[in-house]
Image (cartoon, rainbow, N blue to C red; front, side, top):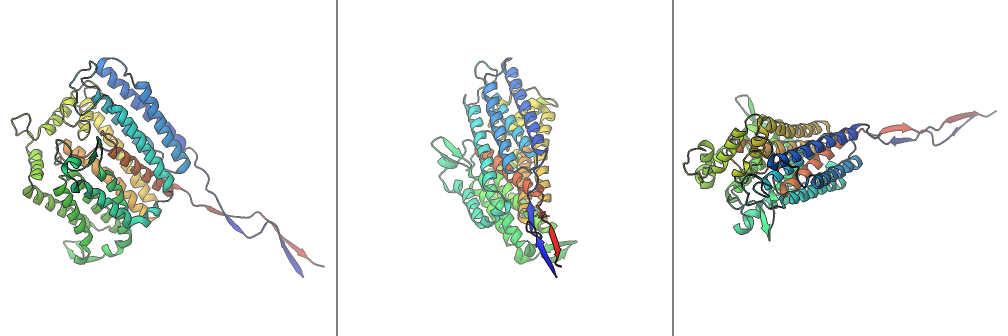
Amino acid sequence: MMAVATHSGAGAAAEAPAPMPRGRRSTELLMLLFALGVVLAAYASAGLGLNGKLPAGLIEYGAAFAVLVLAAHLAVRRLAPWADPLMLPLAALLNGLGIVMIYRLQESGRGGNPGNKISTMTASTTAYQVVWSAVGIAAFIAVLAVIREPRVLQRYTYTLGAVGLVLLAVPALLPARFSAVPGTGAKIQVAVGGFSIQPEEFAKLALAVFFAGYLVAKRDVLALAGRRVLGIDLPRARDLGPVLIAWAASLLILVFETDIGTSAVFFGMFVAMLYVATQRTSWLLIGIGLFLLGTYAASRLFQHVGERFTIWLHPFAGSNPTHAAFQLVQGLEGMGFGGILGTGLGHGQPFYTPLVQSDFIITAFGEELGLTGLMAILLIFALIVQRGLRAAIGVRDPFAKLLAGGLAFVLALQVFVIVGGVTGLIPLTGITTPFMSQGGSSLVASWAMIALLIRISDTARRPAPQAIQDEGMTQIVRAG
């Protein structure tokens, strides 16, 4: 006869918490300090270039920006400890450089500084940009605190889709005095009492979630092959509905809001996510074909669209200095004047380009930092996109994978569209440069996007909990 006795609940299994990462957050902090140093050096250089003196607000703006990025770092350390260590420093560097250039443009023609005063900027523009940076980082922290797992967003797929469509449609439905951007004709904002917001910036995030949730649910159907033509498996005709609806919606944006940039980004994001979800090259070809067909038809039917193509093809054709291509020509000449190494911060003449602080801020960097500086900025954007795609590859959840890929692509597409437009590679669209252009909507939405990518990166890198056995011992007692 034997009796079996156990101590401490032998045989029970538990999950050990994943160990905290070592070194990853320290690397992030070091990179943030490096980014802060670059921003402060650029700020000082701008002041010295303008009037030979250090700018008066160097300590105040530097301290405020340091507090903001440190708060973001502490939030990541607490809420997403396994996240990619480079995304936050890269975004902070772009944000800081944007503040520096806005300060440089603000001071043009003020306080004895050389150059012409930009009428759309006030002496407080830089301070407002720092405030908007604080709002953006607050949104960054809020997203990390509220969304602990990316798949939570999948529950609100259609709700966020409806929200995104409403945000896109609001400017078109409002009277022009509330929605039109002065001097552009584009209806892309909601302006009341001196305060304005661009709903399209937040619509991109909502629609990215909607596209990810919808395509994850429907990808098996959309991936089915129909007729094979020239070695390419075309989708079935009955499955063309989603891409045709997205195409029609992008054309409505183009026609009623005169917003080529948002139209291109919106439809491009959907086609890219559709391709990632189905791995069908045919969807990519169909999307590109529909977009080219739509833009060609719009250029023939609507004067404002056709004018953009004329400016693109013949920017130097007009003899009057106030002709429609004046803005593009000034930007191109400024970048040409900057050459390889640039004139130096504060030494150029970017103030001659209309809206240089928003749509054309890239040309200001190209003039004063040269091709070298501009390529460095584009490389920073490329690194953020690369880290976002890396998070998409690493995460296991299909919804989070598709969402990360969509967000990374929309950032890349937005930068391509604006940089391609101001350099004459593609027709000018008039959208903002993420993190760098003056204004709050783009900055806040960009920080929210980085927060989502960091959350997905944290999910992808977080090790799975390991099961451990209780340390209790089993004792066998033999009765006599």
